[in-house]
Length: 212
Image (cartoon, rainbow, N blue to C red; front, side, top):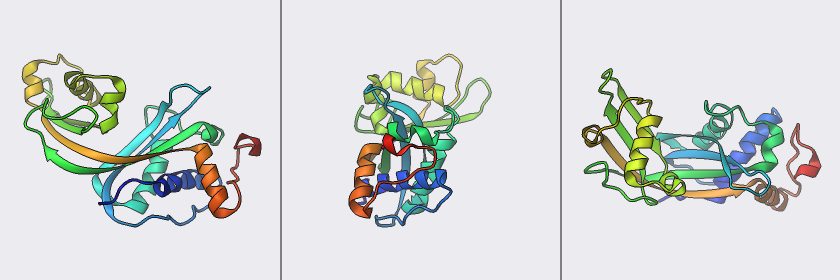
């Protein structure tokens, strides 16, 4: 099984740096393979709790190199919840890469464990018959301190449902649970890695060298 690793997170930083420099990223230093994956960017300000800055991925298997390249940029620049990440924000960023595994159909909306499983929910909106779906990665419910029911209700809102949430509606949800491996890399660790493996820190348009 392929597990998320440092080189994947480095490649995501490389891809974003190359975007700001209008350049090509160095070749990926990890093995190819096809897996569902996510890229999450968080921002750390004044030593506080990391704040979500972008998170997009795919629940379908993708070739890892192309997948991480695409989603590193999509999550940084096109997550509709946030303005695009600017080059000057790079020194405050951390990147988490996730590879999803062990997809299973849950017996009901409570048939999963907080902190172990990510969720994909699918249901029909009773107000307009629209099929709705959404996902949370395994770490989300635990980080938010939610119960299983709170996580499911939040996912229904994420899916775009704005009506009343009833127990019968919860019971109608199809839940797929999955697990993931992840690796988190801060920008300063990225700079140290690049310096050690390539002999110089990355130069970035729009970022003063002193900010590294």
